[in-house]
Amino acid sequence: MQSPGGSVLWNGISTGARPRNFNADWWYDDASSLSFPTYKRLISTMESRGIRPEIIAGSLTYYAKKYLPGLNRRHSMGAVPLTATLSDIEQKKLLEEIDRLLPVQKGLASTKVLLGLLRTAMILKASPTCIANLEKRIGMQLDQATLEDLLLPNFSYTMETLYNVECVHRILDHFLAMDQANGGASPCLDDVMASPSLTPITTVAKLIDGYLAEIAPDINLKLPKFQSLASAVPEYARPLDDGLYRAIDIYLKAHSWLSEAEREQLCRLMDCQKLSLEACTHAAQNERLPLRVVVQVLFFEQLQLRTSIAGCLLVSDNLEGSRPLRSGIATSGEAGGWATAVRENQVLKVGMDNMRMRLAELEKECSNMRQEIEKLGRGKSGWTSRVPKRFSLKMKSQMCSAQEGSVSEQQKSMSAKLDKLQAKVSKQKKQLSADS
Image: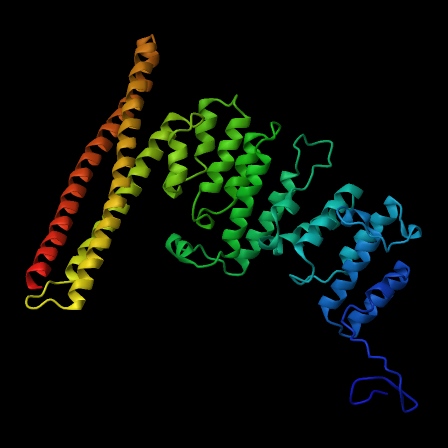
């Protein structure tokens, strides 16, 4: 019996004790003390009586953590008695039974726990059905996984790689199949870029790019296997290819013996148009990339700069049209408009100065590249073996010349625009002084 104040009453006398607040998991520890056959009958009875699946999944997870030491390799389970230690065969059977009892709904067990179960299943050499079920469960919620948990070691003696890349590939396939089944259409790139938060598919793409960067230093990782996993991610899932470029660069550094054709084949995985300016700057100076890829990066980097300059000038034109000068007595609003124009002019000038510096660097890079191309042409001997090579180098040289001509036109346009803005500010200043 309980008093209005909350204390426990015994025979009408207050004992001063407070009632305990029970959570949904209060019985997990008691149930884990049961033998597994008895515990299995308990779970089956709870399912038949309509107990919520998340409560059953929580109990199964608790039971697994108690009797499968592999799930707690980072945290010691001091509460587990020594008599609870099972043999490898018993642990294998227990894990397979828990997999069969675990509800199939998404999100009932955390991705971290599922990956721990999968890792333990590989160590214990569980049945292929059990491993396939766990891979499918993880694939349903792959966007909630972390890179650390996804780095599954390779426990097979038949594979030479350090990590189990095939398993991650299968998990990714399950996620993509579920995404397509749920109506995950290919969104427009602009929609993906404009999204304030990452969608599950873009989160998984970022996760896989990070995974590729982690496994890239493995010298036993073959090129087809790396390409297969990288190309499995849809193009629309990557708003930028910076993460993929980083993984490719690490792979090229660790596999320096790749031929020029293999390097070009690997670089086809990324889209140079989807590299940020920082990645373009790094790629333009990267000696590990094929020369053709470097030229493409320089070309698309200039296009990005041209777009940025055009957008800057368009904003400036809009500002000019939205603030017409008025004659008469100067007001405080006109003075504020003049100050705003001065600040905008200063910001625009700094931005254009930075763009001029970058364009000058591009001119220098194109000039150096043309010199290297000429040296390569003079250093080779044998006319017949050099005809295709010279034709390709000639096209690259023409591209650099076209870029330099475009750079000069942009510099003239920027200078004229900057002079126009400075003249406008000077005119406003003189008019304001005369009116005052």
